Amino acid sequence: MPFVNNSPITPYPQPFPTVSGVTESLSVYLNTPARVQKAIMDFTVERFVMPHIFNRGPAATGGAVVYDQVTETFFFLDRDVQPIMPGSQFPVLAGGEQLPSVAAVRKLGGEVMLTYEAVRRDNRALVARQMRRLANTTVRYVDASAVAALNAAPIYTSTAAETWTTSGADPLYDIATAAELVYGPDLGYVPDTILLNPADHAVAVKNTTLRSSLPRENFNINASHMGPDYQPTGGRNDVPNPIFGGFINQLEGLVIYLTNRVPQGTMYVLAAGMVGSYSDEVPEYYKVIDEPREEAYYLHGARIMVPYVTDPLACVKVTGIG
Image (cartoon, rainbow, N blue to C red; front, side, top):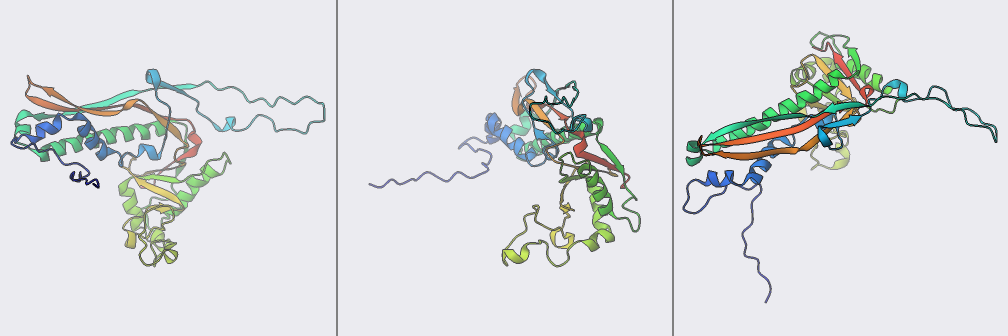
């Protein structure tokens, strides 16, 4: 007899559970902490800007990570390699030593409260809102730590030729100038990312000099090769037309990421993943704590991590754009 699978299809993502004959289905959900953690992390996984700056580094075992911060003098030896006669000794080219740096982790966390009354009344909207607020606050602080690490490092700095609100200002000029600071010293860095405040991005979209430089007919430079059903993905091959695409997603080959953690009037141009790393002592976690004496649940979450800059010359901070 052939096998027949009569089991129901499990939806994804899974809805809040409902137990036959029990109205407090929300309490059942809160008693499955693994699902609560997954739900909150689903809010955060695509929102962190930090992974677009830093590469994931080794675990911060013992609460700290030891790293080297490379400056320009350490990319080349003090003397060039030299012609060597057969049987002759190789010359010592001298390179110097650099003391390592230490970055200690910080425990970033918080919690939100849900009363027994809210749970008993199955107030799912309140739970979802509190979970999202906890996720948003975690993302905000972690990304602020990443930008603070950039500011504390000896990265390149540049000043815009004009504020982008000025008539005739050319944002492409400022981006190209910053990119050249990374390319120019020939240290092997390739800038590919722009970090920008949403308000400054809006100013760039309104800039007529910039808009006139963008393609008008096609959103995607390869659209003519992809057929009539092609849908642009927002990737590196997509040429940004804000009228068709609704968003300038890259300029001069550099992908743009928007974040309010970058102050308005400032822009970062960098080689993503080359600037530095971030290390977690333990993975990001969320859990539910039941406090019967208070008749409340607490959604509790933390991240124990540290971002650190190993290659400061892979990043340029541009000020004065707004």
